[in-house]
Image (cartoon, rainbow, N blue to C red; front, side, top):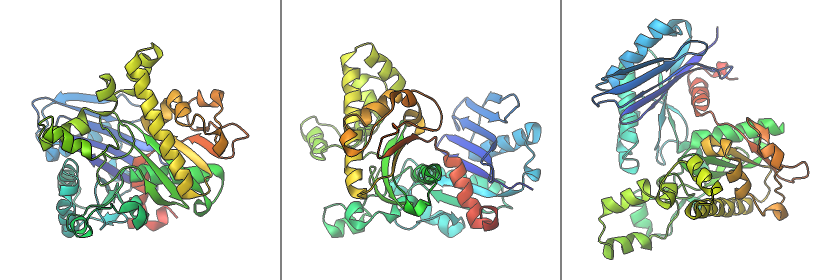
Length: 400
């Protein structure tokens, strides 16, 4: 009998889920509930080969949302009782320095997730809300937390420590944590498989480029450097986030522009990046505007590529030997122009892109035959990574 894991990603007003068959990686069902707690919600349940179910209705809270989900499985399938459900996997954004791997959720773990909320105030409380509702709904199954930050706890102190007063840093848990860990872990494993080599022998750079964007240097399956920091604001230019910025800009905005801390927070997280530079946070719209010769869009793409190129160069130095570079996530998988611009001029470092391959679709190598470092497009699958980590913890024989 096949085994499956129910993967949950709970936001403050949303619930995304997927029933994953562990062995094949197939999504047996998936869904998204949005606008939880608002006057009109939108709920969609999808089963491959069947017509999608979409309802506009009031979804009062996460417990109500899970009730709707169970109704859809009962009415439209697949049959959860026949799916050999191993457990429930929960995406949790911030695990701090405490959780370096997936863990079974009990009351103590739930409390620790809550204790870490100051490090991820927009995410951990919402993740925990989903956990509490799911534990009530799926009371007979093990629940497992898979942390975005766990993969990056192998980063050495020289990379994760900030050069500030050590006592202040320790007291307030200030360090680089990194994010998108499940994606980076999945893609780096997949990259080793595509190269036909053991994971322990492969050094890769993973570029997760979506509305949120991060880069990770992976040595032998272990993260050794990543672009996001204590928060997801650091690093690359993103859809609405600035990425790296001189901290003095914050003081300048407060003292000279009279902006409050909350106003600056909103500016850097929600009104910067592509949106701040061009008026839209969607890379497709920015690319279309750049193709039409609109100067601010052209400049924005140059800034994005400049930051990516510099990060790749730094990670080549950190790794010493790099076998492959992998592009993933929405922009990384679909924006050929961004990939080309990000690696332009790096031929002297052994990176040569084949234009025809780069213009294709799907998982593939896009580097030229003579490129010393292979470059690939590798679609990410965070749900499958979470499912496999859950299975490895609660039923190891399934993934052996």
